[in-house]
Length: 232
Image (tube, rainbow, N blue to C red; front, side, top):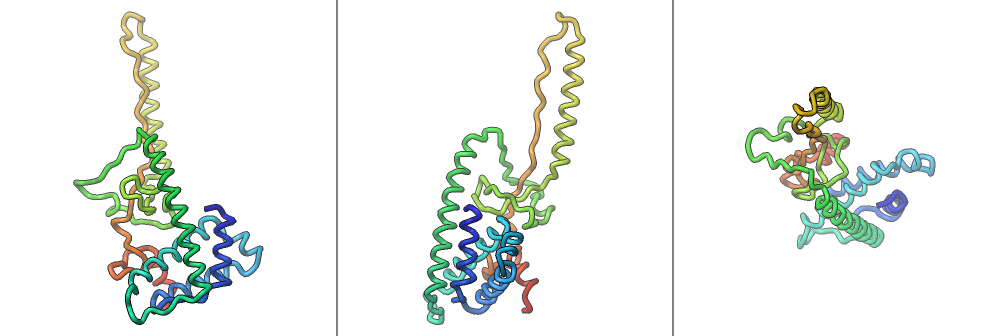
């Protein structure tokens, strides 16, 4: 979703919605609404603070809030009727994000088919990387998990560590190549093959983060952020 679409959706959210939830869901809605309202008080603030990452995060939270509220209040007599402007906004948001997700999944499937050198470690034995390294939502990767398609992946290796490993392999290869080139032609044998290199290791944290405000939640970083920012 491009920046212009995200901006229009956030403006509609602030101008045309007034909440249609109950309990913690309504409090979470109010928290998001106030944050977006304050950060986009004028065009200058919007240009500075409404970055791609900021707007994407807020719209994703609203999308999850809408889905979770619908599931948790389905067929309950005390469910509040959805108001006109709010209903229009959330239905439009649901359509836009679902469309973007469908497109992303299709593109990921094409990339996965072409990425023949990508390896997948399901960690069926031993300690999982996710149990040793805590998830940081500020470092969330933009690519979906190739196994479960969840958007909850994070790089667990620094680029410097990867560069060090690859540089060491390259130095060893260059040394072997120099030695090979100095040998007489009748003693050389096969030319040393190019070294194997590695790339950053990425882990999926869907096993650690539960759905937004779900009854079995508690580890979700969005829930923790909400709990920190509210009084209850």
